[in-house]
Amino acid sequence: MRKSDYWTPAPRRSLLDAMQTTDSIVRAGGHDFLLAFYKALRSVKLYPSENDQVQKAIQTLGGLADALCVTEGQLEVRIAGEYIHINTVRLRFDLDNYAVFFHVLATLRRCGIGTLTFSPGVEHAEWQSLLSHLVAFSEREGMPDLSGLWDRLAQDGVTHLALLPPSEHDAPLADSRQAKEVAKRTYEQCIAVTRDVMTAVRQGRTISVKKVKRAVQTTVDQVAKNEQAIVGMTTVREWDELGAIHAANVCILSIAIGKRIGLTKLRLYDLGFTALLHDLGKSRIPVDVLEQAESGNDEHRAASESHPWQGVLGLFGLRGYGAIPYRGMIVSYEHHLRPDLSGFPLTLEPRRLSLYSRIVAVANHYDAGTSHYGLNRRPDELLQELVKDGEGAYDPAIVKAFINLMGLYPVGTCVILDTYDVGIVHAPSADPTQLDRPVVRVLCTADGERSNPGRLVDLTMRDEAGHFEHSILKTTDPADYSIVPYDYFI
Image 1 (cartoon, rainbow, N blue to C red):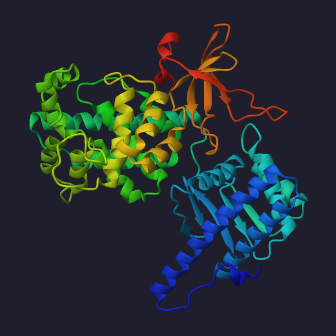
Image 2: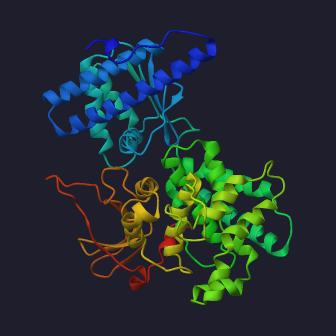
Image 3: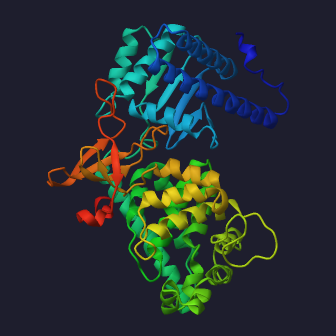
């Protein structure tokens, strides 16, 4: 296959047009390269090296890399937070290829790679060596061993590529205790700011929008760099009369969903602002009315269901935002509406719900349903409900992204393993093709022995025969075992 069969660069026009054209070429070529890289990794993992499918996958990968090198002079694949850059162009991805994206991202991370640089002329044998060692080193337990990987490649005579660790700016926090502490401070700041806003609205005082924006910006940065720890904070599902904990949880989950579907950082800031203030209208309703609405009082329920448009009125009163927060008003009004416009408030004119409203609706329903002040449902049950009702009640694409974020067993779910050990889900699977196999923290053994903080068990691990070492038998109520999930995240 000739290099020109992949794509042909557009002719040069103005400098600006040329830059835009080059970026689009690199972005298109980068997507093709990433998909080919994923297919080659899977082929090398599943078949012996001499297999025709492996050889064909490597040949295709090499051709795409050569074409990018012709366009750009070299090919650099760099991880920055939760993004992959091809040379200087950040790749965007959609819900159809996020599994490919995150598999490649996870593989490079497990090998300790921050940047892969390819010079023109990478030979077939070099590709085969790289792919084989990436598969082997990514499946090792313990810390990434980049120097060991580099030694193996050097022994194989690989000369057309260079490996670098993540830069200090791009690297995730290595110390889990440090990551947890940073996430906890961010979470507490988010709750404190929300309480101040709700209290200010109740008392008729001016809201400090700058504080809200700073809290949201910090949260977005934490989701980008420290997603596992900050999402773990949302297992705090206690009730507070101002709804600040719920607002913080919805904000974090909404930002994480937005990141999964490829929103830019500026749009994530905007989304986080709208999510944090989605229930602002409740601060304009007496607390006793909200409490009695939950007990089934129709009059009070009607008053409670006025909070979407009450929130719109509250957002009109913001000062210092720089512009009227229209998106926040829309989300406040729409977050209890369904795509068919059922729900509340009553809407007479046909409309399509905004993207932010559809994201916040999923995050809001999940957190409210699992919270102690709500239905107190098990996380996995509510997730199954979201999947079942996704077509009619929620945007199925957003639900799909949420499942990719949380796994089929969300963080904090109490599970019983096939060994009869009891634990809680600590983190979703790093492999997006095995969302039913999260990382579990075992807290109680089959013979009743308790441990704290408990050992971590990765359910994707296999024994020498290729069988999974552990599996989830069923989910259970943590209260039956005197387990409080959020104690292990805060």
